[in-house]
Length: 293
Image (cartoon, rainbow, N blue to C red):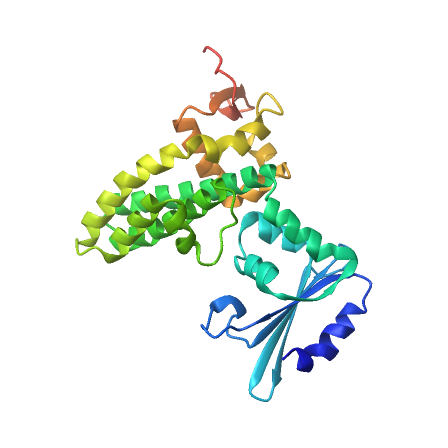
């Protein structure tokens, strides 16, 4: 396969903006790592490129291959937010075909070290996603929409699992449950009971929500640490300021629910500020002790 793809990756390697090229081949276990292709060429470029992602698909007789050209900025976004879980397998397990100035070697060393601050950001984002899924799932459960509740609690357990893996200093992989079974078997057991129990779906969900409440509470300080640290940069915040802050933009649509959850847990306080409407106040958020009214 490498021989067939050589003209393609050599042409990409000749571009001055190309920082590294990795080839990932489909393994014998039919792993989803290559999305069904026999091989994937993953090309990382520097910030000078106009497109963040470029994709091409090739066919060579009975074999098929995919080419992905991704900016370093986009790749680091994937690594931070975990919204492309295959990226870790590609970087760790792929064959390096081109490495300009040891870019890939240094990147993989950085990932192995898993910088402490990057870990805090990832835990915050995962915790916010967990809270969103958990609260929405509980609302569905209380309104007897059990299948929708089941879908949300499954996703919340996935986020809880990923959060636990990150807490231990590892990057969540595609096979995250294999990691969690070794790292935090209590969460794995919850997941197993949800999907394999003979109990009725409403009974399974009832037990899961009770158990999840305890586990989520145990992760509260870790999950909220990044957001609270950023909030300490100034006395109080409007919701618009949250959305405009570079680091907090990563929380995306999960931010309002996350804030409400932290207000309910008394980790964040509310300050009322006058608006142009009589009896209507702006709602500001702070980590400080609320003012006496």
